[in-house]
Length: 143
Image (tube, rainbow, N blue to C red; front, side):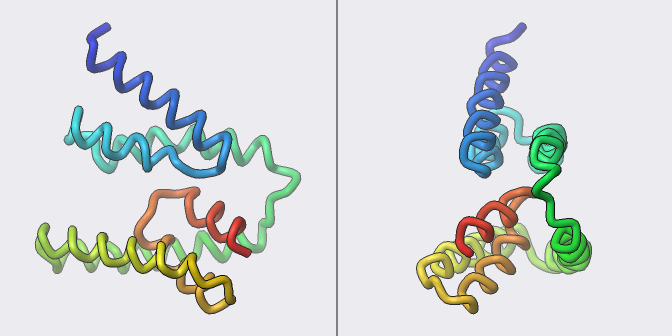
């Protein structure tokens, strides 16, 4: 086992613990670690690593699942995925960096205002700029 592999495994363990404990954080920890240590694995590797974790959380919380809400979220992700592809295809790498930064800041600012409009804006922005799992937890905690 190489030192780099051990470091990635340790980071994944910490990230999974944080995600399991508070409902978000896996991508916030693993994204930068992967970007520094194995840039070729970003974002695909990150999304693949999140699938088993999200599946296990879904199985653990299956009694509390809101299937109607999950359907709407899935529809929104599909539409957002197509819109995201259009953005990636038309914006330069530097422009994409600025776009993601601005929308992430907008999501953070939206969490400061507790009214419904801010939560809706927050959910929309976070859903377009974050990996799976994060919008569900953040909107749930903001509501």
